[in-house]
Length: 155
Length: 155
Image 1 (spheres, helix red, strand yellow):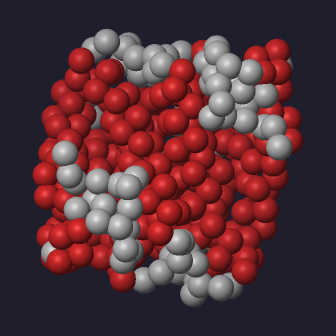
Image 2 (cartoon, each protein chain N blue to C red; image 1 turned 120 degrees about the vertical axis):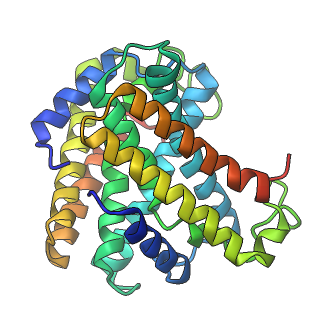
């Protein structure tokens, strides 16, 4: 893979604008995006356990698999799962704030931030980066998650 | 990435036996594995739409992203999400048959089949494979999904 952050960002922007699959209905969009984030979060947890907290033995191959998973979520065209009518003003099963739809530039910015951070994490893992490097970039990915949560996710 | 199917299979077997993260509780294991499969299924849907059915315009970059996503799920150490007590005899929110735990060799076989098929799909997408090649391998991945569903998922 080894794509640059900029390239991924462009791909992500394109994915926001271009359908990648027959459009899912509102329920499916919400369930699918939550699944994508749960899968990413599980893999973030592996890196936290092995590279940050040290509560599980460090395994380079598992770290690469986890980084690949997180990057694959970040590059999967998540924008198509945030269609009109999928915010919490119209659904009980999401915490997406309605103002998401009023701030497309901010939405794009946080999505690009996630993709860039996740791609760098993947590059570090793929190129035999140290545990410390992985831990440092894990923190950057976490910040990119938080940037979106702070802006667009209700408490 | 470009790992061979055999290598991935070995990695997968290792992941089945080795904890990759602090063990999740039963509910978390079920939710996380369902999320992983939902994320994979969404990405399978993209390949079906673009490479098989032709209902969405073919986009090589999106096909690679989708294949990366499916392979990342297959190589994520899903075995750790199928711990004791996570079958349908003890939970209402899963269709995992209890006999899953009586057939570890079969479980490993279907898991390896999924990883090998998904890795080949990723290789095809990463190396500029044709739409027809991608469609053919999509079918193989689908068969690997079905092999597990037939064996271990209740109707």
